Image (cartoon, rainbow, N blue to C red; front, top):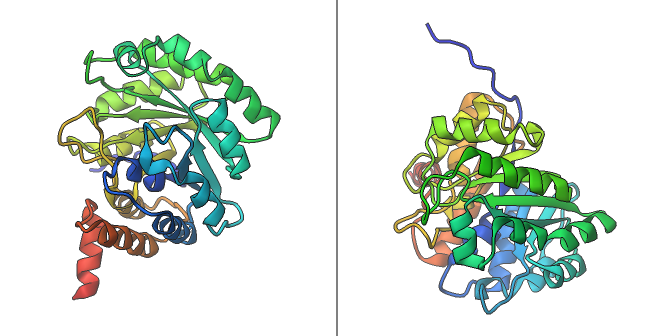
Length: 306
C-alpha cells in the first residue's frame, strides 16, 4: 500500500536560463535573442525570471548586454526580473536598469571561496553589506545564493554547519530568499534533505529555494526530496541551458520543462504553461544550433512533429 506524503500544493519556479544558463555560452548570444527568450518565458507565467548579470564584461562577456536586455524586454505585471550584482557598481547598474530583485552570492565551501575570489566565506558575505543596505533603501528584493552547499570540487564534503552559518549570514543581511545550490550536481536525495532541514533552522523554510544541477542525473530526485521536507521554491533553466566550469561533463541546471512535467504529474500548481516553455526551449536551442537537454521538452516537441 502506498504511503501518503504531504507535498506543497503550489511551488514557485524561478527561471534562470537567460542569466545562469546563457552566461556559459562561448558564442555570443545577441541582445535581441535574449530579449525574445525572456519575453517568451514571461508569457508562460513565471513570476520570477533571472534576466541579467551586472558583472564586469571582462569576466562574463556574455552578460555585457544586460542593460540593453533589461531595457528591451516587455515587462509583465507581477513578474520579478532579477539581476546578479557582485558589488555596488553592479547594484547601481541593476537599479538603473529597473531590476526588481538583486542577487548576491557566497559559497558554503571555504576552499571554493578562497580559490575563486581569494577571500574567506565571512569576508565574501561582508562585502555585500553595502549592496544589501542599498537594496533595502530602494525597496528592492534581495536574494542570496549559496554555491557548493552539497559538495565542492576542491574540498569534497561540505559540513552542514558551514551551510547553516552562511544561511545565517545571508539572513542577517536581510535576504528575502536564500538559494541552496548544488553547483556541481553531486547531491543525492537524503543529503539534500539533511542540508535543507539544517538550513531551515536558520531561515524560514518558505524562503529557501533549491537550485540543482543535473550532472549526475539526480536533480529531479533532489527536487522531490526537497518537496518532502517543505521546500516550495526551485530554480530551473529552460531546455537545461547552462553548465558548470568546475565539473567536467556537467549538464548544467535542471531543465524547466522536466520540472514542470513532474510537478504536473504530482498535482502541484506552478501557474506556468508547459507548452509555451517548450516553444521557448525549442527557440533558443534552434538559435544555439543544438538539441536541448530537456527530455520532457524534446519528447513533447517530437510528439507535436508527429
